[in-house]
Length: 176
Image 1 (cartoon, rainbow, N blue to C red):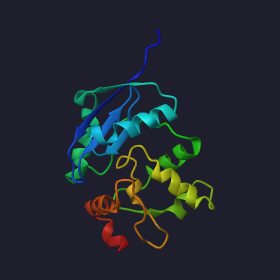
Image 2: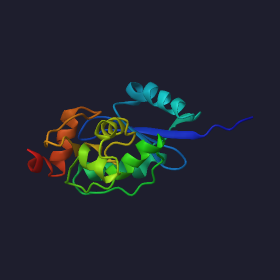
Image 3: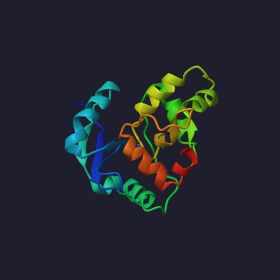
């Protein structure tokens, strides 16, 4: 008998609406915009794509640390996160996500800057694609990535959420 890994999840309300937070035995692996009911099928598809045959189990206790840190972030108390992450994606996606994690609170970088920093200056569109597939928004702050002309472009949760997060961090005045 094969033992399937367990992925725990719980929902929370936030400044930008309902979030579903998921955690494997290694760390946070998904934050989705919306309730479990709205996001579960997308998450299950993503798991299958990455050959993860996991059992999904609801448990606020398992994701409590991440939800507490997210709550502190939304209250303006926390500017960084120190929860363990479990990233699964392509090597390129993980490279991009790890570079995005380095963008400081309250600052922004363009897709072009990220491309240059990872040594792929012509991969601006690929950076956008990887950013779009970020499984752990907010903690991996893809909202801090903007267009090279300073415009707010693309965000999985919608531009209104991106604007709210950048305003919370005090970055919106810098890009307006």
